[in-house]
Image 1 (cartoon, rainbow, N blue to C red):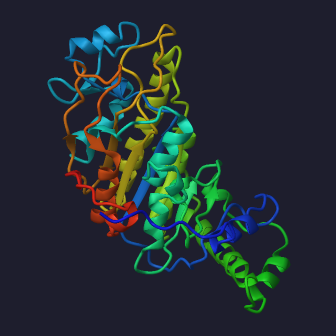
Image 2 (image 1 turned 135 degrees about the vertical axis):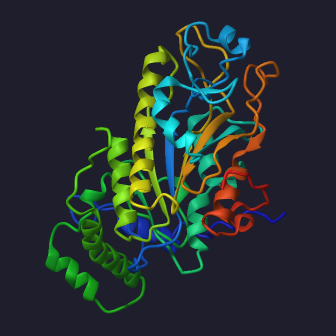
Image 3 (image 1 turned 30 degrees about the vertical axis):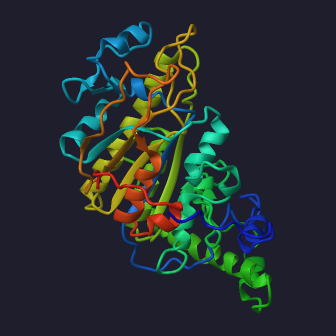
Length: 396
């Protein structure tokens, strides 16, 4: 077993310098952070889309063990009564009914019982663990996807985060610098054009060269992003922020941008009270957006190039609380969707009769999911990225 990648020896690493130097307000000059590699024409290879369910999604009411009486006893107030049946014991929350088409086509896999040993119930700590793939604090300085991008054979292959929040730690590498923008249609070089042109034209001298190259990337890429998005509307997609961003991802893939990883987020899953209605709305937002995205890709002949994966920092406890919500838990399922996915249920649903202090026991380490995506989709060295070997899973 190999150890984790060595962290940078100084806070003044090149990545840190670029990140600080280019973090201008969007309305001023350059929006977000910019990958310093040019984006070559012609598109990349396989594309990974990460959908973060921020707040800790309740896996038990997402993928429902509806035939288990223990489930209904634990959740008399919020238990799902009419799931979309996928098997004689497992179903989806009815708000996810739009995903039935992808399921029937074999394009949706549900990986059950995903988690890690000694799971943290802290949003911040567990999110960092999921994003870095390391459980030890000193090792959590870079993200699993960022390290994979650092190691791509064709140099620094960029990614794109469509989210107004700061750049996800999952996309943070040592060599690649990833843009984080609220909206791809707002990814434009703004402000003083002459100043930007002058910066791009400056001689290549010392550390300023890194800033110059980042500015050049932003300047040259903005036109390509605008062209790739085109002037079409998001017909066929729901009118939600998540759907809009997934529509943009589809247009960028179709337009030939070779970003290998895209990241989007849906927030609101910290459902401590009055969960039923709020969770139903969130899952409908998720299911309808994912279904539209998959249908769009399939219609354009792109579904075999794109793999989408959902994740959340943890699941929720088995028993509902007195506020008709659920508190922080451990293991939960995640979805993997795409034209080359080997669909179906992967792994057994965790037993409700064998709990760990009221929480589900995980049987699949989340790094097995990452290892599968890295090795079989991104063609990356999973052991080098994750710092250890993890058995792959049969979903792709």
